[in-house]
Length: 260
Image 1 (tube, helix red, strand yellow):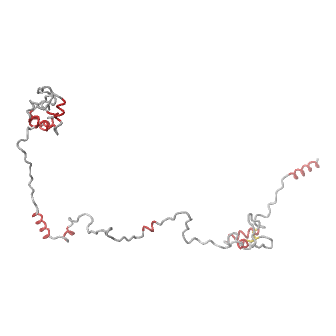
Image 2 (tube, rainbow, N blue to C red; image 1 turned 120 degrees about the horizontal axis):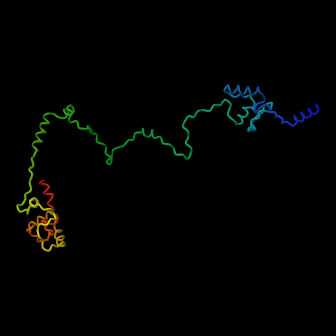
């Protein structure tokens, strides 16, 4: 029975996965070398004597030399142009970054605004006239006016203004005595409304009415001529076909309303 159990244990141990050897680590031969590298980095300068081995993606150049154990140091890589120089510090930029080709250059508008432009006067570009008082008048300021004027000067100017004063007499228009019938008085004498027949007309004609009324500029002129020809009793030109006593649609209502 023991022999069978021992055989089964040996069989299981042989079938189990083997743990691979991790090796000494990437880039360092032992822990002592790793400690030296960490101390050199903490001091601010990489150690020149620390070999670097097994760096992935690094290919030794033709000019690089190997140490006794076959490893390549950082100085060897730097001398071959690979990586940064030991102890080298990048200098800060001393000027503005250059504009890439193909991009428009940005203009310094603030610097251009501070430049003064000299403009010379010419016959086509006259110099501005400088005035002493471009604002409001200072006629109410006694101190300012007293420097420019005197009491005697003001009296002389006042006397000159009075001498130039003239009173213009207005000319009223002269009216002729024969101005025709007074249509205002006629409107106030009548009481009937427009269109209300008062007088009888014989054979009124609408065509004659429109044709003759077209000869007058206004209904007032037609009414005045209508009264001058014997109206309202007579209508020789057919200006009042409805017999209300008003020619060509003349309306006495505005005149009556003005009287109140």
